[in-house]
Image 1 (cartoon, helix red, strand yellow):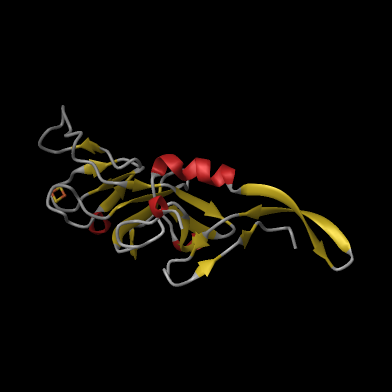
Image 2: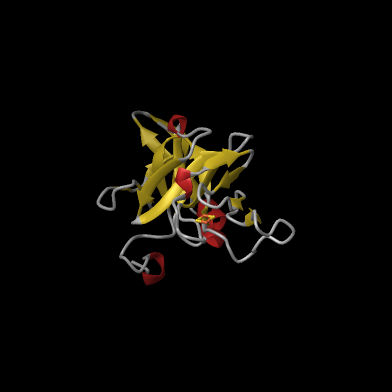
Length: 173
Ligand code: FES
């Protein structure tokens, strides 16, 4: 196992994790814990899933206790407002100059195969990992051969003890 793939807590970091069924996430703030991190998930006005650290940088109130305004999430305590990248875009006491350092972590999120997946590692590596692990191979099923796309190596469920390796792209069986 490459040590750079493992987080400080012993979790695999640079891989996609299932957050839940896609249909269970909508235009409300949903809190969940993944790899011991508090995350809030909601959908923007286009239906895209947004996943942010669930702790306001001001006083650490969970953002999941706030509200959604358009594509943004508003902290329920003093009203700091964050965009889908986790950057503060509105501060009620600094309307002309929102504090850029008051940001929360954002997680790449993607709907696929009816599930919502979160990338829990380095965001810069999310797309690269996705493209580099997709391959075309041939599998034999019964008497016929069929083209299939495989995804290696690790796609892991929310439980660190459960691992689906490899996961197969749909339509190949
Ligand atoms: S705790 Fe969120 S704005 Fe103060």
